[in-house]
Length: 207
Image (cartoon, rainbow, N blue to C red):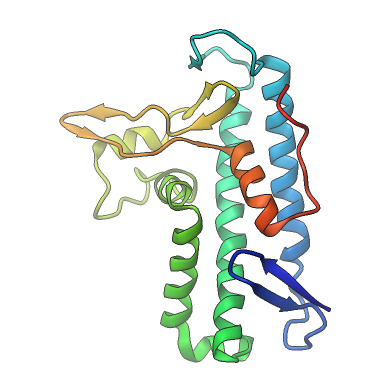
């Protein structure tokens, strides 16, 4: 059974192909991403409203949900990147007429293509994930990390911009250095990507 796994780039996958006997991630990762998005949407609808008057921005360090929301963003970013990297892999294998057995002989090509694919779909989330959720940059410093990145990586990063919880809205500066994140919403990201990747998964609308 051949299924389109990326409607925008017309990437297809044959679930009956014997070369791919154990790709369970096509089932559990979308379910997990959907669960995270539903949980955050419930909080958005319970705590806020699209009809709220200004100010539209809210940062509440006393929000009792802040800790679990931060975890939701971490889990979502990591799982989304993993899922998209695999879609990128399938695109490459289709283009090259390769199977899993060919990956070992073309590791650098595979790595570069999967990374480029994710960057083309969610550049801002990938940047945040690389410095925050995949690893705290202060524990695994890279050449382009600075002292502001180190501090930000272990802070609460979630704020509220009506009608969504989001991260990256506030950048942090210290000792002449600043972070350079762009804001992104977990629920809006899921909704934006669902029509491309998971057409059967919907969220309760914003009230």
